[in-house]
Image (tube, rainbow, N blue to C red; front, side):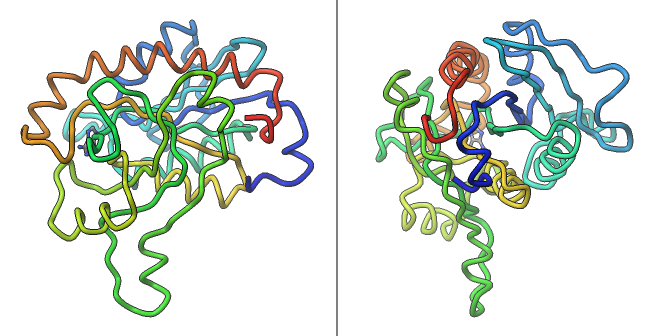
Length: 253
Ligand code: ADE
């Protein structure tokens, strides 16, 4: 979509996955037999940890946003995600970026626990700036690289992915998500999309649903209950995505 014209006509050779949580990345790394990059391809103080290998003839890199040493948890959210994407573009110059992970899904848009969605667009739902121009910049809508054939071949649902830096949401967040038809809510995609656009890299999301945003269960409870199952669904899907992408151009997705 926003790759240079020439690049869009070339077969895709390298793919970078940007993933926030180790629990989301680990099954994929194991399934693809990727190796921890040592010496690091993204040197300190960059917090990201990278794994590389090949699959279906593609160079594949998984970039995990990293570990917060102070709080002993994963570095989730938009700030580490944009840093990871910037450093990954510099280190790997990929032909395609995929934001992969778990997310909340909207039952109003047909989401159920364990479903895997592909993005049609990404935006922020928690940046409210009611000033001329800044309003749209805050929302930061970025169209996804179109993937009609990939979605049809793999039977994946599709929709708008919105990002915010909270697992819960405010009433205003919900108004924005509803107004823009959010199908999926998570914490990184819009930031990754912003940096991908900066580097003119094609990008879309693949997100597995752990919880229902417009349901009646507490998000954190549902999230923890379904994290492993959703990570497994993701791990089933992502190698198939690579298989589909291999040998194709961006325009053929
Ligand atoms: N990750 C998984 N579920 C989520 C939700 N409901 N909101 C934000 N990030 C999520």
